[in-house]
Image (cartoon, rainbow, N blue to C red; front, side):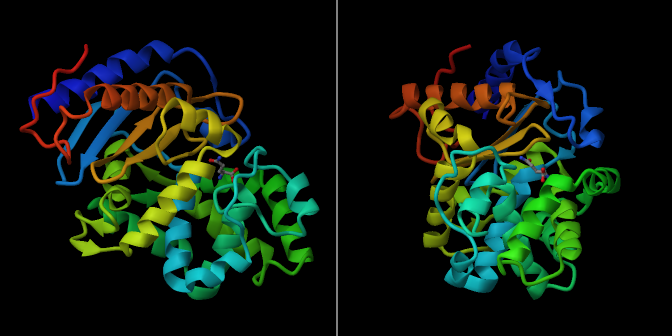
Length: 321
Ligand SMILES: NC(=O)CC[C@H](N)C(=O)O
């Protein structure tokens, strides 16, 4: 217990050296008001233990991290039929790119770029009366926090500045790849991105991906083990957009970032982690959160063999401070 807590605190301390670089997202004005110097990190082990440091209990806008829950729900509802509407390959393009979508006949490369998540949301609009409320309730259940809510101001700000996402949605509609009305799909998509959650909430909520689909906080098998493995593969190859290769080289973990500054990463079989800091690099990924996860992966590599499976409290690890 002590060693794990000290380790998380040392990650925070070292990652804070990166504060000061990057810029807060301002294309969604409601996000531009965030203080760039905030930092938090939380780990949820597969035994349900939580270790956190910094501002890990402060809710922030999860943005694209919601795309992982959208995908998981769509796969639960639709199974493999989903893949007729969205691909599974890295895009190598920015998350809000339009050119590839046009060139490839309105089928987005993967579920984690905006066009892909909008296509996935379209499937959920057909399946649930209010997909965003359903997603919010799932997030509450998985994290064990019934106070999780959709931030109306962020949602309204995204709607007001929706031109680019609307262009993608209309392009897909024109290609016959969107069944529902563009406005309805975008409304649901923005509401999901506007969910407000903390690092602790997110680490808990996404632990099912580290635990072969078993959601400990909810006390249920959320998805089958093979589906968890497949989602982790998609996170590894596509979760960080056009920086997926770089991040794989640096940290080597399945991960999903959002322009709110959060990144969720998975260490399969051991734990889930969320790091958050609002200042982003030019590809839209948090500078300090990426660095924290790189440090974490470095430490894990160095200690392998010392840390017991599951990173439980009894381990004899000597954190490097
Ligand atoms: N990368 C992101 O987090 C982008 C999500 C944001 N809601 C958008 O659609 O632009």
